[in-house]
Length: 239
Ligand code: FPP
Image (tube, rainbow, N blue to C red; front, side, top):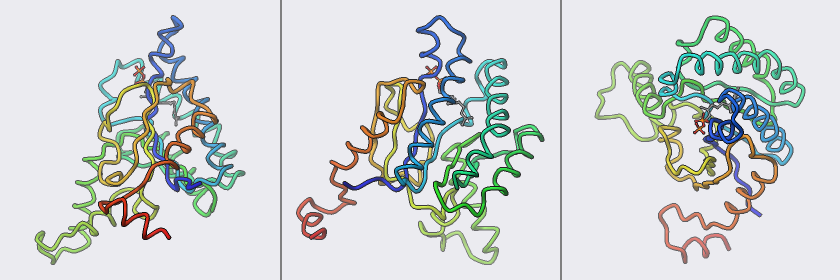
């Protein structure tokens, strides 16, 4: 069975999970963190190479102040309490997104966590925080231009952008999972997911577990990835 090398997840439905139980939205996010831990351990165990989780988008700042500050608190406590366990399990942690808007304390913890785990060779765990796909493409073009001050923009190629977006050194996501019933990409890894298979689940994120991941992987394995070729070409090439 072909297993995806790189799984990207839009973790949606924490608020609705809490609302259904007459609990504050924040409790949904706490339970969401529990689901994150399950999914990370499972992916590490079954040998997925990269896992990228959308934790906070550039649009999420528009949520009520209290929810934003509680989400930041949860992010900080996860960095304080979970990183040593990740390190023991040979997981390498990368935070992608514009981190300049986070508090100095969070930025410090991010740097320490990335430094501590930078030589780990197991699962690459990427957390997208204050991340937007369009921001990523723009910063890639700016980076390219800074590195090549003498080249005119007409020389910019797709490969140049691919080499300068976030996660350039990892394989591109081959499976995108979105929970919570919506079927949108929401400005996630728009460049990197050009050829990803999409899997939408009605489960709310806090309910997502090992079994749910296995179901998504099984669905991925049954699909035929053609990359623009015909079905016959793909079948012929693989024999
Ligand atoms: C979407 O649910 C979830 C978020 C915006 C936050 C995701 C955060 C976590 C899963 C917990 C913390 C994770 C880490 C990595 C520290 P929603 O609030 O949009 O749900 P709704 O659509 O039901 O309102």
